[in-house]
Length: 297
Length: 267
Image 1 (cartoon, rainbow over the protein chains, first blue to last red):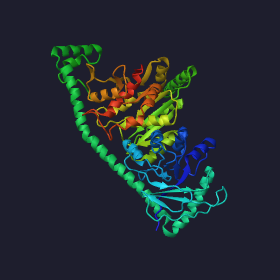
Image 2 (cartoon, rainbow over the protein chains, first blue to last red):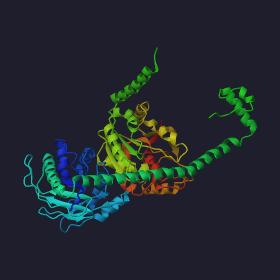
Image 3 (cartoon, chains in turn yellow, brown):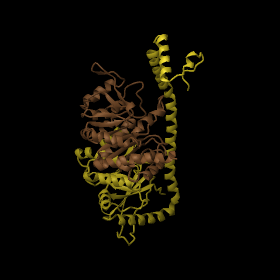
Image 4 (cartoon, one colour):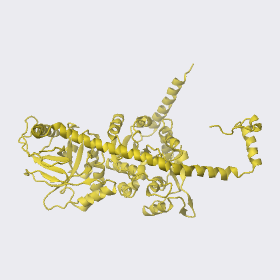
């Protein structure tokens, strides 16, 4: 039995940035993207602008060859934080940052996790996958899966044939990469659409398509419910502390009034009343009224 | 007979003409608005609040707290009102100060060359006696009748580094070479660690102000905003009962500017 989670289709960040600058191509907004971070630091402004404006949900994945030294990781971490903070970044299941490692390369996942924890992100996962172009098996790590698909033909017109295996373990997120060298966003869109159409027909034999859709929507609903609950508790907390805070402020104002005004002798205050009459802030008749209300709310 | 409506329209036109005159004399200023949102009901009023600024074509950068419910409709509302805005979502760390530090980092990552920065947030301070008037008073700095005046302050006075509502420019208590307020010890430590030397102890309480971008950029290029944000307290911290790093950085945001020889103008 397969339980299909949200699928994210891999695309190079360099390609996104290049085509954004040249043609402003829009990818079908229903395609969830896995942005493989392989751009130089200098193209970050363009990548952030692009990701800040697209309607596609996306995740970011890292590759060990790109972030190889501690020095370069220090430069990347603030940018990574901003990339994962943009509003279309998909974090319904917490912050998941897939890491593609080549053989022998060190995975600096602890350093990255520590940085994000310091910034207040506690539920971070970094599933590590090995990327080899000829790979056919599905890899599983930290409730995520990664699979590579081999389209026979990658053109704008021909439908590629996929031959990937079916995900056989429950996962929250599936990352899919294509072995074909995709250098055009339009081709990317058509390859993904064709893959999804085939995958959907395969899934219908085993699991109804709308079951996985409802599962994803339910998770988001549960998350939203949790946020509302916490917000209600926060307002309750405000009400509780407002009593002590406002009480403190009230007595500060009252003490100030006592110190600055009430300590003055009565004859001095009465001169003040006469001054108020001269200034027009009080009527002459009110000086003789016993029940005169000095301050009307 | 002249009715009230035509008179209102004429006054609005005057402010607009004043703005055009400023642009005719000087180069159009590049403004970046850094706005933090915490409350779920704030988005409805933000487009109206920022309407007076649209003529300047500013860059809009928003941060929404990750704990805020109903973010999807907030994103939609903001994108409809400000199509080119960039929105980030960060955790509730350091309240609006932490969010503004994240927005400064975003500003740097986008490589935006701004002349002026405008820091705003949807303040409520529900625990305080004066919470209702606090926000309205602080937001005087984005009223249509005040914005041209604010820009003129900056243009005509080279040493004017910040503009804020006059009543909220307050002095941090200082006596015999020590800060005597509740945040005193934390303030002294931060000033020493980051080599900030304010000209005086005035700061903008409520952290909503216009500022020249240069001194802020200079400081945060040297000290990464996210590295500072890391130190701030989590959750809805208040300093009514004890000093906090978050509230100390509220002072620092003003002192970073005044420490470079600028002053704060009240409006």
